Length: 588
Image 1 (cartoon, one colour):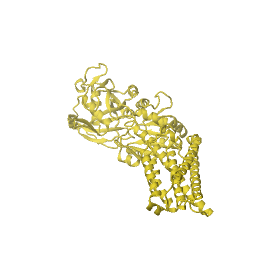
Image 2: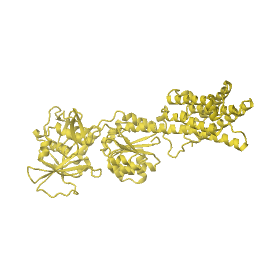
Image 3: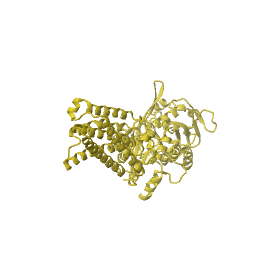
Image 4: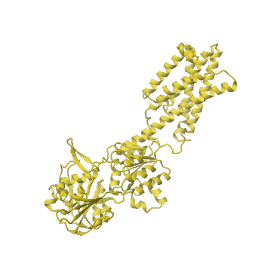
């Protein structure tokens, strides 16, 4: 996640609140505004022309408005219930908003349902982009009422006429309807169209046969406000060198308006937004160029979403993608990091993904990128710290064996160093807080080694310092007449002290120790105290002296140990200073 270069995210629920409210109902002949907010039935439907008068669809006999509200409420798999004094949605928030709009229009849904029980239903799918329900008309005994709701384009495709306010079918003016929908979508409103048809004579029903020859009744425009944190999260991702792309099944106008609100670019800029039909006819080279430049993709099918992931990966990107539906599973699996929606996602999407986003919020994705970078940083810091320890121990023994010299550190003492420093010192790097500027640097190159050339040279430098310092102090103490146990104790303590000083250097791979807050990682302080107590016990407690073949040291010996450790620390600081630009440039 920390290496992600492109985030492909859905619009609804990630960039927006997913709290739908119908604000406008547009019939072929009129426009109505819907007042009130939330999922409660408090509110009215008022004529857009008059602006103040309430509209009762049944009383005014605006049949187009009446059937638009009926289709939205009954061609529906969701419900709105009142629990503990609050209105709760069971199902899809978009469908719930249409139920609420019908209630604000004064429709008695229960009475209509009683007189028109559902017989069949064609569920919504990304391929169809609409849902249809078939209701028996008990009054006639033979008729069936077909109700359809879905994307404007698909509903218009299946409509052959439009309904007037008096209920009569009139010639369909698809261009005028599309322009009206585009105007509302350009304001960031989500559009769902409705249509109906009456079948007479109790016809035989084939569930595989899709309804045609519908009467277009209008569309409902819903407001789904952008999440307050979305714009900041998009900006943070861009500062981190991560491209953010919106892939949605919504109307292109709606998608570009929301994209502009969260900082994904201007809707008027050429080449920054595409509809799915525009992309399907492109060749591979044109599609690769378009995907690289564009940030908004609307009316995208699951197959096209998978193709977009392939293209981005072929362009060399590490792709994170969000999804919630069953049809999103292939793209979630193909993405380098699949992210399923925890609230609205299906179990199939969650199983296909790598991460489940519990709050469906884009800002949380940005936080996951930041956390991923910090985890990776701390992993590299620990490896950069621990490798010289193992290499230094091995070289100390190797030099003694090759040259036939006395071992400066015994195997039991090496075991003590490994056992204590890895836990008390190295493990504390895992709790290192995020460094300033973590999200201001570009993503790690996908094929970059875990250790760069710069860090490899630093590991070698510290290894040499450990070996050289250990042998020097061992030989110096022997030359001063110290016993073998005292010389080895000095060597062990020097080894640990250089590791301890180097630990503070590894808190940042580029920044100086003096530029870091000393107590920002309290666990590190605790670890240093534990290690210091352990070294004192090993040096001065008789039973530890017997167990590890050590001996008490004088104050002068400790001064020499601290002096050598300080010189080693200064050498590492100098290397860090002169190689900083090489590391930040990503040299491998």
